[in-house]
Amino acid sequence: METIIKKTQRTGPVIFSEYTRGKAVRKAIEIGRNDILFELKDSGLKGRGGAGFPTATKWMLSAAANGEKKYIVCNADEGEPGTFKDRVLLLEYPELIFDGMVIAGFTIGAKEGIVYLRGEYEYMLKSLEDYLEEMRKDNLLGKNILGKDGFDFDITIRLGSGAYVCGEETALIESLEGNRGEPRNRPPYPVNTGFMGYPTVVNNVETLAVVPHIVLKGGGWFKQHGTDKSTGSKLFSVSGDCARPGVYELPWGIKISELLFIVRAENTKAVQIGGASGVCIPKSQFDRAFAYEDIATGGSIMIFNESRNMLKVLKNFMEFFVEESCGQCTPCRIGNLKLLEGVNKIESGDFTFGYINTLKELGKTMQVASKCGLGQSSPNPFISILENFKEEIFNSKNRNGGSNGKAR
Amino acid sequence: MLVFEKNALSEDIEEFILKFGAERSALLPILQSVQRKHKYVSDFAQQEIARLMNIHPVEVYSVISFYSFLHSNPQGRNIVRLCQTISCDMAGKIAVADAIKRELGINFGETTKDKRITLEYTNCVGMCDQGPAMIVNERVFTKLDPEKAVKILSEIK
Ligand SMILES: Cc1cc2nc3c(=O)[nH]c(=O)nc-3n(C[C@H](O)[C@H](O)[C@H](O)COP(=O)(O)O)c2cc1C
Ligand code: SF4
Ligand code: FES
Image: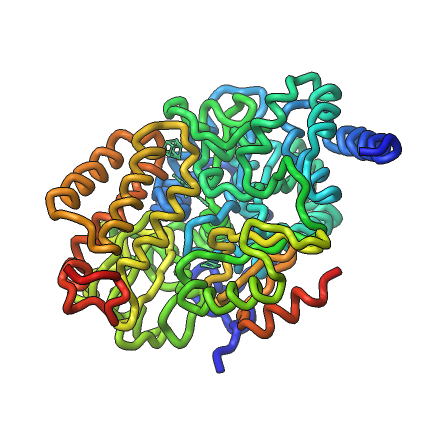
């Protein structure tokens, strides 16, 4: 039987290494803002929410921005299908996330932090609030933190209400401000004009959880893990056809085949990397690596074995996007419907290759013409699955059990 | 709605506004609180919230309609959301869904006659390593099979 991994059994080079609450905050006060930014820059840490923006640059921009108030927002909206690493961090490693937020506040001069917790994670709310209360008692939150004059910072938690697009940072800010979660045009960026118009750092849960380790052990130490361009480690959320699904901390640069071995995946046909908005990689490319210079990812890994029907997988993803598009811009609102319609037509055998090519072109238009990352990336699985699994999908003899519908 | 129900709802809303404030940024926490307690945000509740926050009721409605966990029409006493995304699908979602439908005698998107349960599909709930997964109100249940899912639902009031 599979077992569910406990915190004490987790091991990893960075995030899952040992840490005691408050330790990095103490160190941060000691070394001061400039050294924190220096170590962060030296570490090469990039945002773990998917977009991979350098964290030090984001912090420096908001530190330099003018504003009577500043905010730190922890993006705990974790809505990408197949991602659940932030769940593990929130449940088992709140000390890392919250200390990371406190350090961010200290560095850019923010006094308020907000965690945007997806509505699906409401069950964690009580334990997280209790944890914040403990931190207040230990003077790790509140006024004059750890005796440092004028270092005030506190954290509140706000819940989402079931909208994937609210994970996009400007939609998240709209939602915090009490509006529909519709992405804004960028620029302006949140580092200048964020929550209530004030400079705001929005960071993913995992990004913030890495920060205390970098502050304690230095950017040089962090860089020892991973590759030149992709420093440190990454959390991978692994699900689908394997004996050991779960969250793994692995160095960047690891190959797909290596990961498949670790999680005991057998007869693997395809791996969807980066969730519904990611790409589907066939067996012939399993020697490719997880890294910003090869396949960059927020860490969602969904494994499909030989028995799976890739057209059905694609249909599930396209249904997801049709439901979750905020409808604000046409390429995404209409485009995703058209792509789903195309999948349904392939399923029933009612298509021409000319039509499929037109849809692929439509997908490419969506990638450039959509307003936010949702519509820009939703064509990814459509394009990569139809391209990489065309034999299976279009050659009726190869259709698994004929379950793709009528043969033509 | 009866007069005393309206009064009780108004009191709730006033209490939530006292707790979260009357600024626009408090709108979501207020709507979520009404949703949690009453399972939907009625027309009357929308008007009360709009009045007390000094915004147009259409604004309140437009926000509610955006979020899939906020409802403007009555729901069952318990809201059950089964994950429909691919990892749960591969782990046996369809068998679980069929068993629930049979047992409750309703389809997804419907509410049982006794108003006990509203059944919905939802997208990935972050439990993909332990699917199939469902959320009942705010509790999460994982590694479901048809029998286990039906048993869980039979135990809620
Ligand atoms: C549709 C969409 C959904 C997103 N969902 C999330 C999410 O759930 N969590 C997250 O951290 N970032 C998400 N992002 C990325 C955020 O916009 C933003 O880049 C990120 O929070 C920045 O943090 P980082 O630099 O620490 O990665 C999403 C982006 C898009 C376009
Ligand atoms: S791309 Fe899609 S989700 Fe993003 S703003 Fe346009 S319609 Fe909304
Ligand atoms: S796919 Fe069901 S919880 Fe993620």
